[in-house]
Amino acid sequence: MLWPVFLLLGWEQVEIVPGVTRVTPLDFVSYPYSHSLLAQLAWAAVLGGIYYGIRRGARGAVVVALCVPSHWLLDYVAHRPDMPLVPGGARYGLGLWNSLPATLTVELALVAVGVAAYLSAVKSKSKDRAGRYALWSLLILLLLLYLGSVFGPPPPDTRILAASALAIWLTVPWAAWADRRSQAR
Image (cartoon, rainbow, N blue to C red; front, side, top):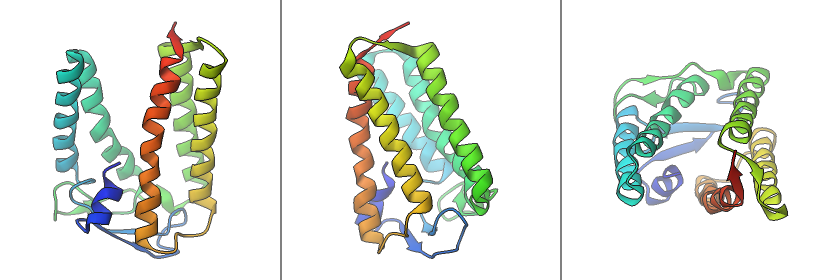
């Protein structure tokens, strides 16, 4: 979620190159502050520390912190070799995005598993109709945005890409609202 901010600030660079992979036209030229493993470990410590400072829950802070570098691992699988371990270092990636069918299978399966886990283990029953609509409308929006990013035209330029990517921040309060409207199983 920091990546579009860093793009707009000029700290990181991406180029729009249709065909660079089958799934995305984005050529990630440089993103050492948002996507290197070392940076993500640092962001994990910061975010886990903030969570702990607010909620005073060590277990929750560890879970929050572990979620940050999990993004690097998932990107490592999806990206072509452009994922740095350290800023300016060697880049790695398995290139899942070079296959549209494999990408859709893996990424949609991960989403389905995540939604199923949320519904069955964490919060499964909405307190009211607003709770049902909040969750399902968020999931539908995220699915439509995903499909648009895969099957839609490439963004016209990197500034518009970065500005539109900032909209992902709207999903945070939306998800919190949906979560508050659910009750623990």
